[in-house]
Length: 320
Image 1: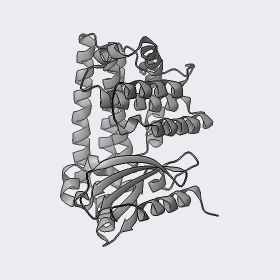
Image 2: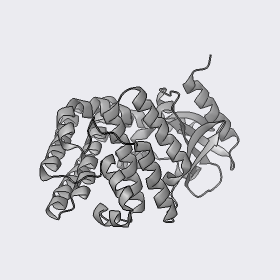
Image 3: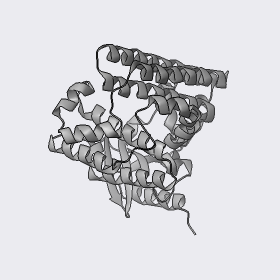
Image 4: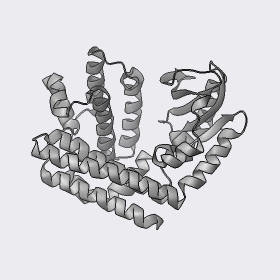
């Protein structure tokens, strides 16, 4: 009997075989690429086409499964030089499974990239890059507190900790999994995280409805983003169902908060959240507050930034 992972790979093969223009390279990522797909999984597919196309992301139903496809011209296949220069941005290649490679170039690149991304040189570059990002975020979070932008401080400090957590996970385990990051990193700092984060295990509100209302409002305002489609409501519901089933309530809150932060960042045109929320209905402001968009204190910022720095130090010690 075919496993769920095998079935979704089959669906991905069928999808690329029916793509126009012709696909020359293709891979699956996410849980399918890692071989961890379950009944809640969708299919993340990256395709490189023979003829020039405009790069785009497409979400669709195919064979009753959700496919999230990134479509690129073959000329945008990563190069070794690009991976050397920005290893952090190409780390996901380690978790891809190639399902079409017309000339062997993609597979050879992937094998080289896995070796390179596990090298001391690449790890040093990744640590330097993420360290700079985390430092910048923490500095800005403190500035936000001084400027009474306490929700922006929340978003920025939480982002710093997530960046540091993903760095630590990749350096230690060569993994990009969101679920693994939470269980491996945040769980080990649960006491500090519970004190500093905007979440509570006793929170009782409809997270799915909040995200749907947020997307609906943004669509009505004329925003046209891939993240605003109805399919993303379904994807979020599947994640919520998976995490509820596993009784991972804190992880559920953190991931759905991250979904909402992504929607805000994609549509705010650089506005601080304090200005962005003025355009939101009061009912939606309240829902987002319950989702985690709450004011932070300087203590909360300092606690999260301290954990972020600790994770970077651990990542550095791991490879040395």
